[in-house]
Structure formats: structure tokens, C-alpha cells
Image 1 (cartoon, rainbow, N blue to C red):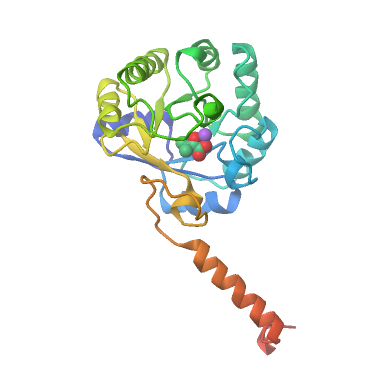
Image 2 (cartoon, helix red, strand yellow):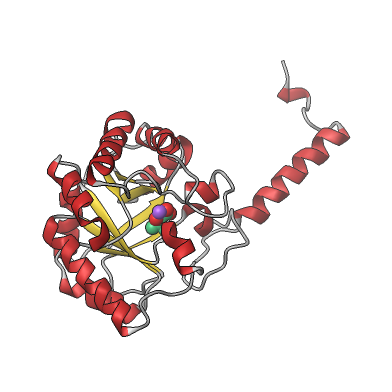
Length: 265
Ligand code: KIV
Ligand code: NA
């Protein structure tokens, strides 16, 4: 695939090729991710935590999401870019949802949007799809509803919640979503969902029976270090490496070692 489209992702599922997705919020990181061969970049509302230091994803605004998304879009040659609709930009009614989705598409140049929830937001998703905007669903742990649940623990362990999740996934496929993120649900349930629908299911903390995986980039490269869920595999320990580099710089400046004769004009 020279350039990933929503169609490529469905083809990947059909061909049994797993989909790789990570978050990106800025130009420089997006450039590296695109060059590394990622399939999908998610401009997640996790930017609220990772970029801005908020405790939840709720405070980030639509304008801020558009700022992050446009920086990411400027960096990519290959990846499909998905942008989260932030809390408060789609829950009131379908027209508001469509207006927000249109702003993201027009002002950032992104290729698709994602929003959290099932049948509660069905009409909003349909409205957005009708405008020709590809939509990725998000079920299971939905961080924008954190105050309803109170914790970030595993979702859909009870049968009733698991049944609703399956119904929601079938509905999202039926109305025309191109993929679904499943966050922090039992692996067996996630596998069942992935086998029940023909659109890709991309998991985070949802086991290996799904069609692709997503993580927050800053977590998987170890820039953050206070967040340690079981599903997180760390590929680097950048918190330690970067702290070391910054300390060396401080030492070199203080000692007068930097800059040396060759590092000046
Ligand atoms: O905002 C985000 O980073 C997400 C992923 C965790 C799926 O929605
Ligand atoms: Na998100």
C-alpha cells in the first residue's frame, strides 16, 4: 500500500494482515511514524493528557484537536489520519456532530474521524457518514465517559455489558463505519466481536484476536512513566534516556564544556 485508505484497512482484514496504529499529535513525531511504516495515525484526544497535562480527555477543545491534526497531516505521505471528535463537540445533537466533523475535515485535511459510543450516538454517526466522512467507532472503555464509570478498569466483563457491546459493534458496521476501536475489554469478547463483523476491529488492551493494535505513542516509547497498565508494551525507556541527555547538557553548560571550539563560529 503506497497510501493507506479506509478501503485498504478493510482489505487488510480480508487478507488477514494486521493493522498497526499509534497516536500522533505533532509534525515531528508524525513524520517519524509515517516513515516507520505505520498504517494509521490517530490524533487522539489523549493529547489532552499527553500534550496538555490534563487528568482526563474531557478538557481538550475542537480548535485544539484541529491544531494537532493539521500538524500531523502536514507530515504524512502514507498513513491514514483519524482524528478524535473531542468531548462536547458531538453529544448534543447530530447537526452539531456533523458541524464538528466537517470542521476537522476542512481545517486539518485529515481523512476520517472517530467518536466514542454506540447506539446513543447512532444518529450523529449516520449524519456524518451521509456527508461522506469516514467514521471509526470506539467501544469498551470510553474515556470521555470516565465520570459515569468512575474507573479505568476493564469493561464488559458482565454478560449484559458484553451483549450491548456486541450489539453496538454490529450496529456500527451496519450503518457504515469503516473500523472500530475496542478499548480494554476481555480478549475472548474482543475476538468474538472481530469474528462477527467484516470491518476491522483495532484493539488496545483487547488481546490478540482482533484485526489490529493501537497504543499511545508516548507510552510505548516510555516517555510517560507513571502509566503502567498490563497491555502496555514499552519499546524504549525514553524517560530515562532523555533525562540522562538533559542532565548531560546541564552539566556541559555549567562546566563550560559546551560549546567547544568546533561548535562555534
Ligand atoms: O485518544 C486516544 O489515544 C485513543 C486511543 C487510546 C484509542 O482514543
Ligand atoms: Na481518544
